[in-house]
Amino acid sequence: MWPLLRERAWAGRRVLMLRGEGGREWLADRLREQGATPEFFSVYQRRCPQLTPAEQGLLAQALAAPARHVWLFSSAEAIANLQALAPACHDWQAAQCIATHARIAARARELGVGHVVLARPDARAVAEAVGVMQGRPLQSFSL
Image (cartoon, rainbow, N blue to C red; front, side, top):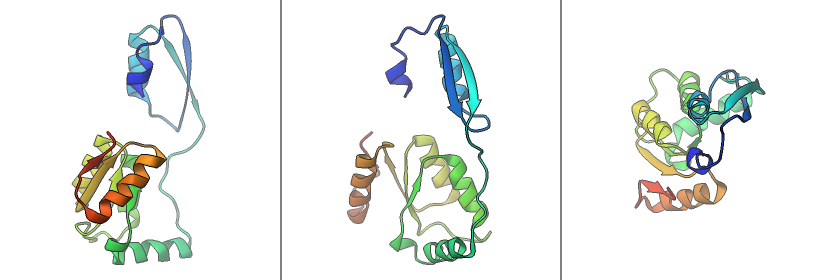
């Protein structure tokens, strides 16, 4: 987002930043460097979900048949939450995912995900990445 915003005149402007409890510090720092005053408002909480029995069953199915599922990660925190919800000894090598940022892709690789595709965080790029994954010819898409 910063490449789109950095060309604007920020000096003396107040910027309302909607976020979870914390986060967006990098962007706030860039805005401050340009003379803006970021103000934060927390609109959601970040926490590991508590799965219902049906959701636990779906997770178990996805972990048991990784070739039939593709994980979509838009935050490294989501990866950490998934890791916390999965059995401690789970082998992620057969898993496949789409990550919407290079740092998120790196975190997926650290977890041990065997096939990671990097795609822009928009619906078209993600849909195209799913199609590409079926043939697995690329490691990134629409950057």
